Structure formats: structure tokens, C-alpha cells
Image (cartoon, rainbow, N blue to C red; front, side, top):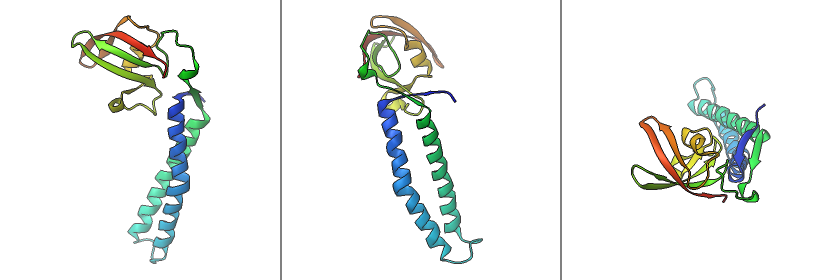
Length: 158
């Protein structure tokens, strides 16, 4: 199976979620199923069916996280020498040359991406346009609204 690139923080967040699912959520669901069984006829027992459905989602997520972690290629950019090049895990400050708007993004794995927190997927058009570039380079990113030109101001390995 393919390696899944992941930052150290992303791997930790997945491990925390896995631990939460296994130690808190799974036992709570099992208790809910046991309680619902005590109510009698399972065919017409909505609580039982809801708990079983929740159990299915929980077990599916556990399997998904375990698969991702087993195939994870954890990359810690803080351990790499900063040669000024944008790589996976780097934090990049860019300037939109049209609007003079500064933005800072961290390039992360698909599971970690959250645009509201300025975490962009390595597979996003923005990240693909930035990877390999250096500070003071100008790059054009293809967006649904048209091409946007960015000047790279700063590259950090945080």
C-alpha cells in the first residue's frame, strides 16, 4: 500500500482520536447496546438499532485510523535543515500580488488539512504550486476563479 505523508502533529492527533474511540466511545456504545437489549424486542427497539449503527461507524473509523497510521510516513520538518525550499510540512507566508493580502499556510497531509486553520493539503492546487519554490519566488496558482499570482515571502520549518 502507498505511504501516506503526515506531519508529526497530524500523526499525534490521529493517535489521540484512536485512543478516544477505543477507550471512551467504544465502551460507551457497548453499554448502550446492553441497556437497549434489556428493553426487550430488538426488532422494534430504536435505541438498539441506533447504538448498533453508531458501533458500526466507530469500528469503521478505528479501522480507518489504524490503516492510515500503519501506512504513515511521518515527516518532522523541524529535524530538517531549512534550505529555504518549500517542502511537505513547511510553513509558507505568501503575498497575493493583486490584492496585497498576506497569508500563511502550512502544507500537511490530506487528513490534517483544514483551510480555516491555514492547513492546506499537499495535494491541493495551492500546495502543488508552492512545493519546490523558495522565498522571493513568484508563482501562479490555478484556482476556480482564475489564475492568482503569489510572491513567496517566507519559508519556515516549524
